[in-house]
Amino acid sequence: MEDQTKPDQHNNGTEEVADETNEMTLEKENCIESDSDNNSTTEVEETANPEQEVEELSTDDMVTRLKDEISHLKNEAEEQKDEISHLKNEAEERFERFQRLSAEYSNYQKRMEQEIQKARRFSIDQFARAMLDVMESLDQACDIEQAEDLDPTVVAMREGMDLTRKQLLSAFESFGIEEVNPELGVAFDANFHHAMTMLESTEIPPNHISEVFRKGYRLHDRLLRPAMVIVASRPNENTE
Image (cartoon, rainbow, N blue to C red; front, top):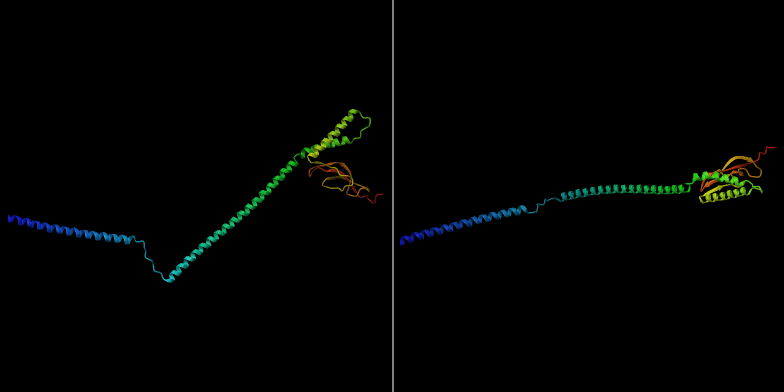
Protein backbone atom coordinates (compact mmCIF):
# COMPACT_ATOMS: atom_id res chain seq x y z
CA MET A 1 0.00 0.00 0.00
CA GLU A 2 2.76 2.43 0.81
CA ASP A 3 4.51 1.71 -2.46
CA GLN A 4 1.41 2.68 -4.49
CA THR A 5 0.84 5.98 -2.63
CA LYS A 6 4.33 7.30 -3.21
CA PRO A 7 4.18 7.17 -6.98
CA ASP A 8 0.87 8.97 -6.94
CA GLN A 9 2.26 11.75 -4.81
CA HIS A 10 5.26 11.99 -7.08
CA ASN A 11 3.05 12.21 -10.10
CA ASN A 12 0.86 14.87 -8.48
CA GLY A 13 3.89 16.99 -7.70
CA THR A 14 5.13 16.76 -11.22
CA GLU A 15 1.79 17.77 -12.60
CA GLU A 16 1.59 20.75 -10.29
CA VAL A 17 5.05 21.93 -11.36
CA ALA A 18 4.06 21.53 -15.00
CA ASP A 19 0.88 23.50 -14.46
CA GLU A 20 2.77 26.31 -12.77
CA THR A 21 5.32 26.35 -15.60
CA ASN A 22 2.55 26.58 -18.18
CA GLU A 23 0.86 29.40 -16.28
CA MET A 24 4.12 31.33 -16.10
CA THR A 25 4.67 30.81 -19.80
CA LEU A 26 1.18 32.10 -20.61
CA GLU A 27 1.62 35.12 -18.38
CA LYS A 28 4.94 35.88 -20.05
CA GLU A 29 3.38 35.59 -23.49
CA ASN A 30 0.48 37.84 -22.41
CA CYS A 31 2.97 40.40 -21.14
CA ILE A 32 4.88 40.29 -24.40
CA GLU A 33 1.63 40.71 -26.40
CA SER A 34 0.54 43.56 -24.14
CA ASP A 35 3.85 45.33 -24.64
CA SER A 36 3.60 44.78 -28.36
CA ASP A 37 0.09 46.25 -28.42
CA ASN A 38 1.22 49.24 -26.38
CA ASN A 39 4.14 49.84 -28.70
CA SER A 40 1.86 49.61 -31.75
CA THR A 41 -0.63 52.04 -30.20
CA THR A 42 2.15 54.48 -29.40
CA GLU A 43 3.47 54.27 -32.95
CA VAL A 44 -0.04 54.86 -34.37
CA GLU A 45 -0.57 57.81 -32.06
CA GLU A 46 2.80 59.25 -33.02
CA THR A 47 2.01 58.73 -36.71
CA ALA A 48 -1.51 60.21 -36.42
CA ASN A 49 -0.37 63.22 -34.44
CA PRO A 50 -1.54 66.32 -36.50
CA GLU A 51 1.01 68.59 -34.96
CA GLN A 52 3.80 69.37 -37.39
CA GLU A 53 7.14 70.62 -36.61
CA VAL A 54 7.30 74.39 -36.99
CA GLU A 55 10.28 75.58 -38.85
CA GLU A 56 12.21 77.93 -36.80
CA LEU A 57 12.78 81.25 -38.70
CA SER A 58 14.89 84.17 -37.83
CA THR A 59 13.42 87.68 -37.54
CA ASP A 60 14.96 88.78 -40.84
CA ASP A 61 13.50 85.75 -42.62
CA MET A 62 10.06 86.46 -41.18
CA VAL A 63 10.25 90.13 -42.25
CA THR A 64 11.34 89.12 -45.75
CA ARG A 65 8.51 86.63 -46.03
CA LEU A 66 5.96 89.23 -44.85
CA LYS A 67 7.30 91.75 -47.36
CA ASP A 68 6.98 89.22 -50.15
CA GLU A 69 3.43 88.46 -49.12
CA ILE A 70 2.53 92.16 -48.96
CA SER A 71 4.10 92.74 -52.36
CA HIS A 72 2.08 89.86 -53.79
CA LEU A 73 -1.12 91.28 -52.33
CA LYS A 74 -0.32 94.72 -53.76
CA ASN A 75 0.18 93.23 -57.20
CA GLU A 76 -3.14 91.45 -56.97
CA ALA A 77 -4.82 94.67 -55.85
CA GLU A 78 -3.31 96.57 -58.80
CA GLU A 79 -4.51 93.90 -61.22
CA GLN A 80 -8.00 94.06 -59.76
CA LYS A 81 -7.91 97.86 -59.91
CA ASP A 82 -6.95 97.75 -63.60
CA GLU A 83 -9.71 95.26 -64.30
CA ILE A 84 -12.26 97.45 -62.51
CA SER A 85 -11.07 100.48 -64.49
CA HIS A 86 -11.40 98.52 -67.74
CA LEU A 87 -14.91 97.36 -66.87
CA LYS A 88 -15.87 100.91 -65.88
CA ASN A 89 -14.65 102.31 -69.21
CA GLU A 90 -16.46 99.57 -71.08
CA ALA A 91 -19.67 100.30 -69.16
CA GLU A 92 -19.37 104.03 -69.93
CA GLU A 93 -18.84 103.31 -73.63
CA ARG A 94 -21.88 101.05 -73.73
CA PHE A 95 -23.97 103.65 -71.90
CA GLU A 96 -22.90 106.36 -74.36
CA ARG A 97 -23.74 104.03 -77.24
CA PHE A 98 -27.13 103.35 -75.68
CA GLN A 99 -27.76 107.10 -75.37
CA ARG A 100 -26.82 107.65 -79.02
CA LEU A 101 -29.05 104.82 -80.17
CA SER A 102 -31.87 106.11 -77.98
CA ALA A 103 -31.49 109.62 -79.43
CA GLU A 104 -31.36 108.25 -82.98
CA TYR A 105 -34.46 106.15 -82.36
CA SER A 106 -36.27 109.17 -80.88
CA ASN A 107 -35.33 111.28 -83.90
CA TYR A 108 -36.43 108.46 -86.18
CA GLN A 109 -39.81 108.33 -84.45
CA LYS A 110 -40.21 112.10 -84.81
CA ARG A 111 -39.32 111.94 -88.51
CA MET A 112 -41.77 109.11 -89.07
CA GLU A 113 -44.52 111.01 -87.26
CA GLN A 114 -43.79 114.08 -89.38
CA GLU A 115 -43.83 111.97 -92.54
CA ILE A 116 -47.13 110.39 -91.51
CA GLN A 117 -48.67 113.78 -90.76
CA LYS A 118 -47.32 115.16 -94.03
CA ALA A 119 -48.70 112.16 -95.92
CA ARG A 120 -52.09 112.70 -94.33
CA ARG A 121 -52.09 116.42 -95.07
CA PHE A 122 -50.90 116.08 -98.66
CA SER A 123 -52.46 112.77 -99.62
CA ILE A 124 -54.89 114.59 -101.95
CA ASP A 125 -52.13 116.56 -103.65
CA GLN A 126 -52.58 114.98 -107.09
CA PHE A 127 -56.37 115.02 -106.86
CA ALA A 128 -56.36 118.68 -105.84
CA ARG A 129 -54.11 119.60 -108.77
CA ALA A 130 -56.53 117.87 -111.13
CA MET A 131 -59.48 119.74 -109.65
CA LEU A 132 -57.84 123.13 -110.15
CA ASP A 133 -58.65 123.07 -113.87
CA VAL A 134 -62.27 122.29 -113.04
CA MET A 135 -62.42 125.27 -110.67
CA GLU A 136 -60.80 127.51 -113.27
CA SER A 137 -63.37 126.49 -115.86
CA LEU A 138 -66.19 127.25 -113.43
CA ASP A 139 -64.63 130.62 -112.60
CA GLN A 140 -64.45 131.57 -116.26
CA ALA A 141 -68.04 130.48 -116.86
CA CYS A 142 -69.32 132.39 -113.85
CA ASP A 143 -67.43 135.54 -114.84
CA ILE A 144 -69.32 135.81 -118.14
CA GLU A 145 -71.79 138.66 -117.95
CA GLN A 146 -75.40 137.67 -118.47
CA ALA A 147 -77.83 139.47 -120.73
CA GLU A 148 -81.10 140.59 -119.24
CA ASP A 149 -83.23 138.77 -121.78
CA LEU A 150 -81.65 135.32 -121.42
CA ASP A 151 -83.76 132.20 -121.64
CA PRO A 152 -84.88 130.88 -118.24
CA THR A 153 -83.12 127.62 -118.99
CA VAL A 154 -79.80 129.44 -119.44
CA VAL A 155 -80.39 131.34 -116.22
CA ALA A 156 -81.03 128.07 -114.36
CA MET A 157 -77.82 126.61 -115.78
CA ARG A 158 -75.90 129.67 -114.63
CA GLU A 159 -77.33 129.37 -111.15
CA GLY A 160 -76.35 125.68 -111.13
CA MET A 161 -72.76 126.54 -112.06
CA ASP A 162 -72.59 129.16 -109.29
CA LEU A 163 -73.84 126.62 -106.78
CA THR A 164 -71.37 124.01 -108.03
CA ARG A 165 -68.53 126.51 -107.71
CA LYS A 166 -69.51 127.37 -104.14
CA GLN A 167 -69.68 123.67 -103.20
CA LEU A 168 -66.27 123.05 -104.74
CA LEU A 169 -64.81 126.02 -102.87
CA SER A 170 -66.28 124.64 -99.62
CA ALA A 171 -64.69 121.25 -100.33
CA PHE A 172 -61.37 122.95 -101.03
CA GLU A 173 -61.51 124.80 -97.71
CA SER A 174 -62.36 121.62 -95.76
CA PHE A 175 -59.23 119.93 -97.15
CA GLY A 176 -56.96 122.94 -96.67
CA ILE A 177 -56.88 124.14 -100.27
CA GLU A 178 -56.69 127.93 -100.45
CA GLU A 179 -56.66 130.42 -103.30
CA VAL A 180 -53.58 132.51 -104.06
CA ASN A 181 -55.26 135.56 -105.57
CA PRO A 182 -53.15 138.65 -104.82
CA GLU A 183 -54.68 142.09 -104.98
CA LEU A 184 -53.40 144.72 -107.38
CA GLY A 185 -50.52 146.74 -105.98
CA VAL A 186 -49.31 143.91 -103.70
CA ALA A 187 -45.55 143.32 -103.70
CA PHE A 188 -44.39 140.51 -105.94
CA ASP A 189 -43.49 137.33 -104.02
CA ALA A 190 -41.64 134.68 -105.99
CA ASN A 191 -42.74 132.03 -103.47
CA PHE A 192 -46.39 132.37 -104.54
CA HIS A 193 -46.36 134.38 -107.77
CA HIS A 194 -45.08 133.70 -111.26
CA ALA A 195 -44.31 136.80 -113.33
CA MET A 196 -45.45 136.37 -116.91
CA THR A 197 -44.05 139.73 -117.95
CA MET A 198 -43.31 143.23 -116.71
CA LEU A 199 -45.16 146.34 -117.85
CA GLU A 200 -44.29 149.94 -117.22
CA SER A 201 -46.71 151.67 -114.89
CA THR A 202 -47.01 155.10 -113.37
CA GLU A 203 -49.81 154.09 -110.99
CA ILE A 204 -48.30 150.98 -109.39
CA PRO A 205 -44.82 150.93 -107.81
CA PRO A 206 -42.13 148.86 -109.50
CA ASN A 207 -41.99 145.13 -108.61
CA HIS A 208 -45.63 145.19 -107.55
CA ILE A 209 -48.47 143.27 -109.16
CA SER A 210 -50.35 145.26 -111.75
CA GLU A 211 -52.60 142.44 -113.04
CA VAL A 212 -53.58 138.87 -112.10
CA PHE A 213 -53.79 136.66 -115.17
CA ARG A 214 -54.67 133.42 -113.34
CA LYS A 215 -55.20 132.58 -109.67
CA GLY A 216 -52.94 130.20 -107.84
CA TYR A 217 -53.66 127.59 -105.14
CA ARG A 218 -51.86 126.03 -102.21
CA LEU A 219 -52.51 122.96 -100.08
CA HIS A 220 -51.79 123.92 -96.47
CA ASP A 221 -48.23 125.31 -96.73
CA ARG A 222 -47.42 123.59 -100.06
CA LEU A 223 -47.88 125.55 -103.26
CA LEU A 224 -49.96 123.66 -105.82
CA ARG A 225 -49.84 126.31 -108.48
CA PRO A 226 -48.45 129.87 -108.40
CA ALA A 227 -50.56 132.81 -109.39
CA MET A 228 -49.79 134.03 -112.91
CA VAL A 229 -49.30 137.80 -112.66
CA ILE A 230 -47.98 140.85 -114.50
CA VAL A 231 -45.46 142.94 -112.59
CA ALA A 232 -45.14 146.69 -112.85
CA SER A 233 -41.84 148.26 -113.76
CA ARG A 234 -40.47 151.80 -113.60
CA PRO A 235 -41.40 153.89 -116.66
CA ASN A 236 -38.61 154.58 -119.09
CA GLU A 237 -37.74 158.27 -118.76
CA ASN A 238 -36.29 158.37 -122.29
CA THR A 239 -39.62 157.38 -123.80
CA GLU A 240 -41.25 160.39 -125.53
